[in-house]
Amino acid sequence: MRLAELFGYLPRIEAELRASYATARRSAPPTVRPFLDVNREFTLRGGKRFRAILVLAGYHLATGRAPDPAIRAAAALEHFQSWMLIHDDIIDHAEERRGGPAVHRSLAASHRAGAALGSSDDYGLGIGITVGDLEEPFTVDALLTAPAPPAARLAALAEYVRMTRLTAYGQLLDIRNGTLDPGTVTEADVLRVHELKSAIYTVAAPLEIGALLGGQRPATLGDLDAVGRDLGVAFQLRDDVLGAGFDADATGKSPNDLPEGKRTLLVVRAWAEGNPDDRARLVRVLGRADASPAEIEDARAVIRRTGSLAYSERRIDALTRRALARLDRSRAIRAMGKPLVREIADVLVRRRA
Picture (tube, rainbow, N blue to C red):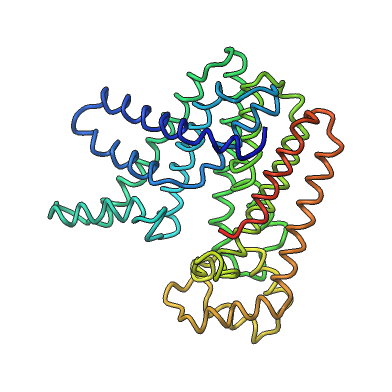
């Protein structure tokens, strides 16, 4: 199969998501249903659904067949993504997501409009955290009810547990790194966070969950895991480039990562290679939501001038080449599926949005 064929399954994934919320709503107490509607609205706003597509890809790689039995598991990864995004937006104090207000901001606005008692912002945070948590039962239920043999479902669930734990480790380390002096955060620190927080749940685990549902044994997943991790880190490094406002003309993105104070490889390398004036320009922006456009542009100029942007591009290229070399050597990944993995790699690291 080609990647375009897998994207043809998107309407069925969307239908599965709608059905899961409808089922939960019918059995929920009436007073809880409005909160389920918040989850439904947020998840159905859209998104690239790439993690869901990778579940389908993993199933096809394992079986050589059409991935219809993996559609419910693909939807599970979208529930997980909603959980992560809702919480991430709270951590990052984000205002918008997927073309609308961040969930906690929307909830605060509803509280304010209804003239309810207490702090609207506190209400938004508390309910936002909880509706984020509410996505996990959807994820687990979808994996438990996937049309696969019991042993395959258990293996997929075990991978989900591993994915969730490692993603949380990455989030913890990412938050910690944001409190450290940029000069004390190393490239290894950054790449470790990218591997744990992004690469595993974005690329490696979705591929592996699909493969496990297709009957592939956990012991044979080493190549798929290694390829997925390298491509996932390259994906996140590309996201950092876009999030710092580079290629802004193509993406329309604003350079939010710098005012949010994220210790990306761009920042860490620029700090290490820059002079005191360069570091002062970075300090004026990092973690400062009120940084002016001129100050942000100064920081971006430092990233360019110190060679940090070029270095990130080289790391993206090296990780991609290593992943594809592992793919070429692999005897565990079916030959007929290797072109599909190459397509996935291209979408992950060459994207402009």
